[in-house]
Length: 339
Ligand SMILES: [Cu+2]
Image (cartoon, rainbow, N blue to C red; front, side, top):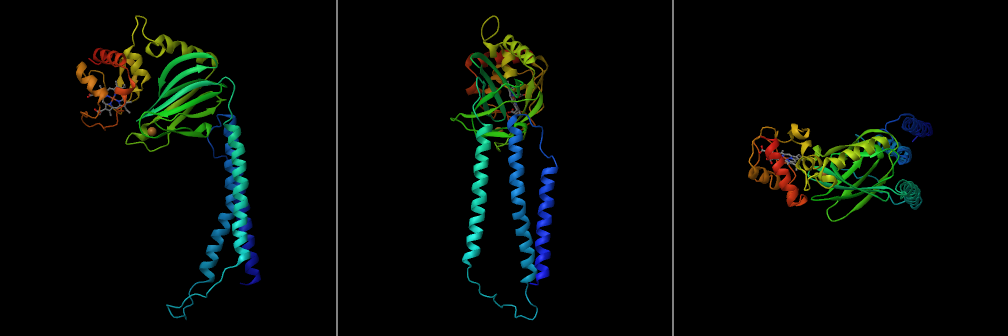
């Protein structure tokens, strides 16, 4: 290889690396930073990208060089072998040592960042998150030392600037609880409770996504994280508690069917005017005119009879997750509301 070619090659590698690294830092390609940790993780991500760019450019450039430099000479016989090559201890040490060092340093830095981002906070609000095919359920356990005892699903409403501690699990297959704006996700596995912590700093509405392919309804397993002012949150909590079952039952005692419908995410898939349900994944329950027995079977064993033209994606776990009293109240409510 001519010396002038070698210099041109080195210049090309350096210039394109610098250009790509500058692009990485100049262009903001991340979604809203919801938590203090979001910015730290974006920083880590940018650094990882920047460090990998020179390696990427170098490897591609070397590949192109080899394609040109070592191509078959037309005058050679077609079955000619390449020149035999022996190892080079010096090069082998370099290509083992440099990546080892880079990976070690980046690994330590990632650990430091993650340790900060996931640090325990004082008096967090504890929320149990339960994934099931194909909804997220939330149980507000306590806020500091105050007991909450409210259940919801699909929408997660939280006050701004409050440290949150999620305790994540699953009723069936593996799901994964992901809040892109917080840059964090955690697997939800049956029989195991995994924690996830962050503190939302901005009011607004953010995506909650299941990132573990969990069945045919996986793509519908989405929800909203609604971050509101503390005053609005207190109002919301009051409304939830007076709403019924989630807070401990109807004024007359016993669970409230409408509340169970709302807090179990039924409205996310079914239209039902009486409970503000607007989903279209499942059949509309307004005017469905189903008997109590039909309703009960549809809820406990949704796969037994599939409503015409609809996919078999209704969660099969309500028979387990609802108590007998809750199921009775739900069936009674639906028999009335869906006439
Ligand atoms: Cu899922």
